[in-house]
View 1 (cartoon, helix red, strand yellow):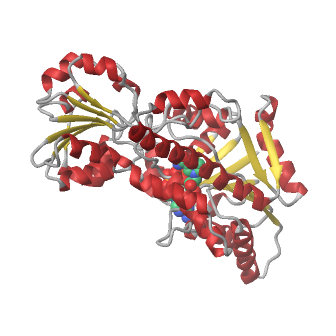
View 2 (tube, helix red, strand yellow):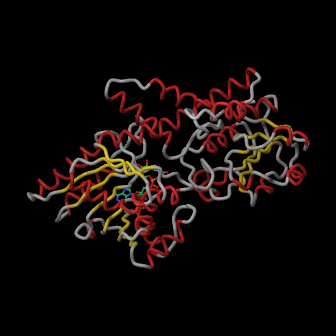
View 3 (cartoon, rainbow, N blue to C red):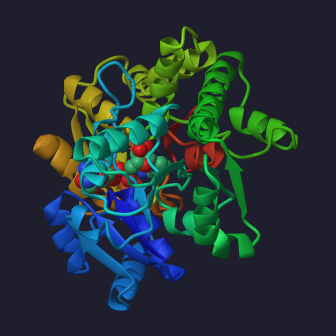
Length: 437
Ligand code: NAD
């Protein structure tokens, strides 16, 4: 089988490469010429564990190709996955311009049957718009060519994307014809053989499943942040509460970690888009509105603790930040809480020294030289009045505290992810602040 993947970002590149890995012939398409040129040279535009080696191996084997021209491959492929971005519009709804542009290109140039699968996260009803857009282009051309649309939302996690794609908890597929179902079954058969579930459903349900999943996860985070904030006020320890409730199998242990608010390219925009979809249908998502409100507030929590520690006077303080990416194992800084924190620190007159194992280039691209880029985690702590743990990369878990204490002006540690033991850190002579106790 031969397929095209349109959009060579986090989702598209991983999807294309993983399908190539299981023997499918894949053409990855992107309008960004620089990206495609780099990929042809074996240079991967994103940081994702295991991806580079897999891309190069499959490209060498001839199963993975790259092009900027979707038109040129339409005659060759049976299935087209659209994995272009769906950023938030000004009003919070999903911007479908890239998705519909892809549909227009397909409608203008297709000469035979294709199955058009939307992998991007899109609101309920988008498959209908994709179908109508393609049909309108065919009508303009005065030709009759059969095609199908389908929805196949992606659940991979950045930082673990390849493993998630190769061993998914489930694959959700929305279809409306037997032909589309057969094609998707064939494509995902290797996954079925490994006992992973492919759940077929109607298209609106598949589109909704992705938003419901991300909204549920965001809800758990905001719920725990709310509980953590209350724990501080009443003298409870959220870490204990977490293990207390997580051991209930109805609740489970995952996604119960309090912190400094969720960020990234998905949760904030998907929660907003679902609220908007509800609004457009005359309904209010009260729970999700609260989830957003708690999250906005939570992004300031670490800064407020710092302010309290220094009795409101942060002028000329040097603050070290460990971690910039919105989560570990990625260089993605879209909606990263670190950006808000840096902004607040700079506005308060602080000097900011930052270090992240993967996101330094991305940070420089976003905020330039307004902060000092340290060479490593120890260099970041140099002359710092306080150190803030923002992203819980593994390498920050067991640092040499003696070296850090010596490097810092005052040994103050603010742990935004609750990864350190309060007692242990205090015994080393640090003042320690964390979330929820
Ligand atoms: P991204 O911004 O990393 O990549 C999108 C790519 O599409 C870019 O390279 C862009 O140049 C390309 N593009 C835009 N218009 C195009 C066109 N007309 N033709 C060809 N290429 C075009 O985005 P992403 O993070 O991979 O996300 C893609 C979609 O998947 C979004 O809807 C997102 O919500 C969803 N999603 C993302 C994740 C994630 O972890 N990043 C997980 C699940 C779902």
